[in-house]
Image 1 (cartoon, rainbow, N blue to C red):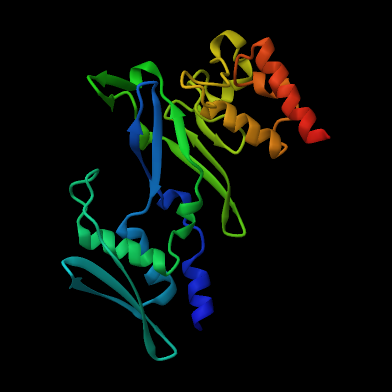
Image 2: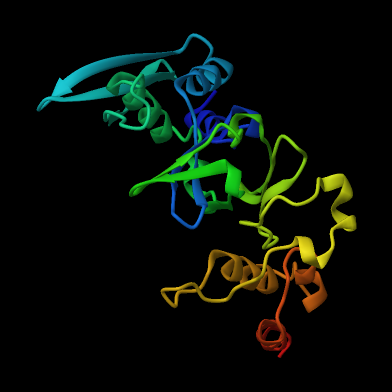
Length: 255
């Protein structure tokens, strides 16, 4: 197998089942930022599947920093790509060696599409987070590990990404503009949701910045996913003023 074929196969998007998700932060408004990442096992499996036994690793300290190099045997010669590892404060068990290995895997294209994932922000339900002084923490009611994720790719780039919680409720839906909504009804009963059960669509937050919800709606309009105010009302309560803003966005697209 030549170098181009190897890199192409290594760079194929990871199966969504092989991608892990964890909470990066939660603000006091209950918006959680979620990170998508891979673990070392994913890199090992991809290298085994593509290269068989023709790959190896080596580690070295350079100026006190731990570097991992992944070598792949191509046309009888070893080709190396390396990167440096860092300590992780979010996961104490993850060492520099594992981090360096995964970063070297990125150099070969393994999971590189993760860099193109959209910003994942989810509006948590009140029972899913708590505020302790200046810190916001998830509660045991936030069962992120039980959520299921679905993704579609086009030309190696992510096209759609959806998260469904343990109750069957859509919690994130890119690029359809349904991200950061409260959990209300399971997917199978979504058409039974009433306007009273839905959150308000706010355009601006207290700091006069555009809200994540509004940004998602505008993006969905630009992508042709939303074609009327009624499309938005499936997921949000919409005031008269906001409805006018939506109509203006739609009219701008249709000009």
